[in-house]
Image (tube, rainbow, N blue to C red; front, side, top):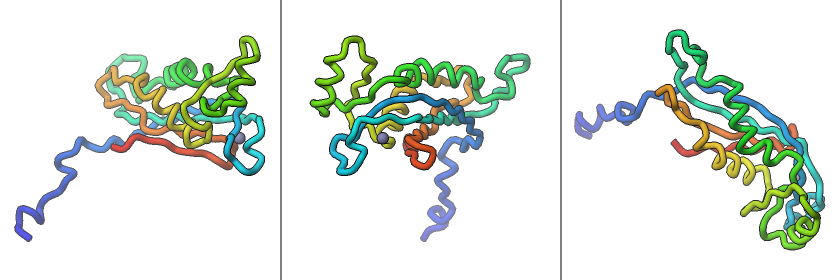
Amino acid sequence: MSSAASSYNPRHFLPPTIAMHITRRLEFDAGHRIPNHTSQCKHLHGHRYAIEITLAGEVITTEGDSAQGMVMDFSDVKRIANERVVNVWDHAFLVYRGDKVVMDFLQSMPNHKTVVLEVIPTAENLAKVAFDLLVDAYRDTYGNHLKLARVRLYETPNNWADYSQAA
Ligand SMILES: [Zn+2]
């Protein structure tokens, strides 16, 4: 190995790692079913879901700004999550577009709050769908490298899925 190769350190070519993360947790109620499941998840049922939104960023140091000392104001984290996901999914039935029998049933109910998904509403898929709905909404307006780092979706207190974008 040459001396040049042995001194190579890929970290020198990457932006500094952001160590500060903040998380806002929100809860909502929704119905779903896993149509192909062989056990009780194939039945129509609901959960008290929880979603945890984790943002990475540097602490804002703008003197006198309302966000000084924060990555993002928690109330803004909550407002965006409510607008994009929580208010949309709360007290809705989350249904896979390919679940024809349930799609037909829900469409027979006037004004029913239904969220049609392109994927089966498992915790894993809901975490990714939520991430995709949120990732563009958390914008870096202070130049503090703010970004959505992870969405954790709890189906029950003991079962959850994490989705994060590869760095
Ligand atoms: Zn379930």
